[in-house]
Image (tube, rainbow, N blue to C red; front, top):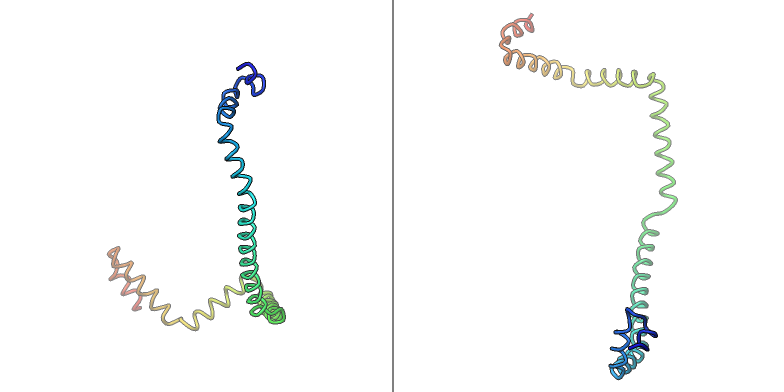
Length: 145
């Protein structure tokens, strides 16, 4: 006991005694582990190589698709066209006087396209509000004048 405590310490001496009592089993397990170490390493290497090879094939296929679909020249043309369109819009907005001019033009165009229907819709809305407040007759005569 004193030797076990000296070698393994006060807290671990019981494990050292158990190991020495079962030293034969320890030797068997150690031999199995040493013999299988090479097999496990070989299996891990085979798996890694197959996994790596498969992932490389997938990556190469994806790069092939990317290269086939995405041509630099096509994107350059698209980006140049987009830049030209945005420059034109910028000049138009500046020519109209900024946001106020754009809103005015939008209002005029809206009224030209939907003016009759917009006026009728506003009249109907006012009438319906009048019905809900009890003033429908007054609003109806006001609209007719």
